[in-house]
Image: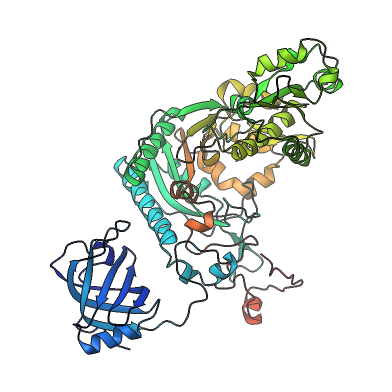
Length: 595
């Protein structure tokens, strides 16, 4: 192999734009085309590509080296930039090429297990095993570079607004925050464990007690949960906390950040202030606390319209305190055939529904699945209520209101995708406010906390904490983008008595409170400013801004479904000596090799 001694890179490949200059570039051989008397090599680095050319006027030794180059070899080349005869308008360097006068082959590559090309159909498992090769592909490199830019804009914005970046510990005490902790055994303190943080929640509140006023951190967080497309076991949170503020102050600060971020990274103007919906309104209209507002098709309450009908399904739902709700899909009758509606019904049953009623209006007379139970004029009233016309499909569900809304919310998204009415170029933000403080657990028959135990209830709801949990709303909010929850935030409890009451309502004894949160309770005894904050998912916002479908596409070295990393084959067994030092014995080894 050649040495690069005496050869210094002067330009990156994607920055070679002007003819007439002498440049030195280095990179990977993207493609090599040997036409006999002329050789073209497309050279690639992190900024893009540039074409190298060798012909019969080249030095013989240089031409021979070029003949030996293969895809993914690493080379350096010096030469004169000249205008290309056959221009390529698809790339920034498409008007020029480098006529190479000096060439060095620094490293030869063996044949890669898959092609390094932009569009790839290779099995993802193979690509993740050779992730360092997968990351050579331009789409993934663009995503990782965009993530870097998002992180830079984030720091710039919050620094300029008076925030101090403070690192919080990675080894912390295990405290209940809603998900399973990753535990780290202590070698020194036998039988005791650290936890990796699910978030820096307690520490950032203590920083407010300490008087830092405005805190920011791009914090690594860890949750031992089952994975999916928008979840990894380790993730990055844009974590912030502010003192002497209320909800509006925090939301305004984050809105300014969102506007700055989309402007600088995508050149897109986000209209402020962002839209707000209460949790109750979001559920009523969209059947979801993270609604996708890029399309209409809102859920409609037709309970009053059908309250006098003899249709037993509607009657039973209303008499038992439930409701009857409908979705009207415009111009959908051609796509939602009877067979497709049957598929929707099966999906609805799979998530709790007993069934669906429908109206499919193709011909002059609408086809209604419950027409025989309707008296004269009743069907027409339903169609008028939901705004249905010829060509539309109406899906109706009658059951407990909570279940009806959630099922129709899920069907709304399925139908919209099938109809192709979601505009992927849109970025629709919405604040979801006045979140419920408690949620009902059907399994236990009890009301449980919907948020972490430091969340402040709304002032007017404090009196209902014990007597009527369903009425209690929290000073908590979510930021949603295109149906994805980006961020959660809340005002924090700073009153010692109220905080202890909250712990008690969660079923914690005084001993448990002292064991798990004693240090926080003690801190508040020395006075704490009013404060609140948010955690914004850096990975998720990057995924959406990149137009990616999966967090793996914006994470350099991601985990797969079973939380393993295929490239390094972790988690892995460790030797007995390490286990002995930790006083740990492995008693049951399960096979977790499947993805």
